Length: 216
Image 1: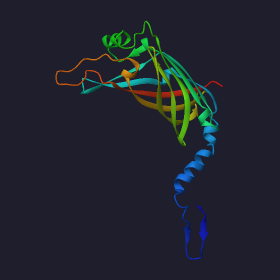
Image 2: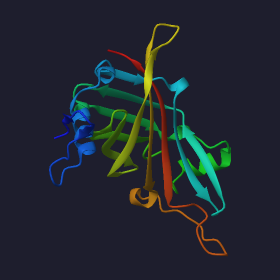
Image 3: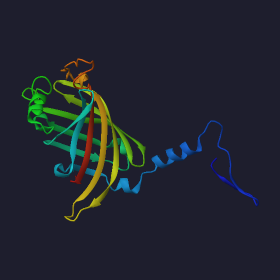
Image 4: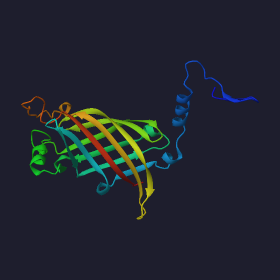
């Protein structure tokens, strides 16, 4: 199947077996064969904070979007290019570092209505599985802990490439995103609008723009 017959009049691809998708079969074969570029990434990586962003966005008053980021965090990524399913990531965020550009709003976010940073100073993510979906796309599942609640989340992660920078550091770029319902982690504070709806959306989009430096 998938073999080209050689006739004098034309070159025709023979039909695949009934029920088989030749394109899907090729994709599966490609994923089963480790990409040399990905194999070269095998090792331990650390996020370079000055060139990375861990952010979020949420609808406000139903008509606009508030964007913010956390500026104090630590993270390590162990990437296995030969067996991407063995890759893992760990992230610790100090929630008091939240920055939306408005001091009053930031103070509210670290207070008891939301993160309660005094009692729960850290938010954590620990991956539990990684699935390669295409040559440069991965789905990472892990446990996200906010306040005193831990729940599983699924992160879409795209590999953007790697390079050796002018200072001799090997860098790899990743983009990640997921959307959560903050109520699942006990962040239930809200105000109702006179016209209906909520002041702050329950849905929060988390965004990860990562520049990682090889550490081993």
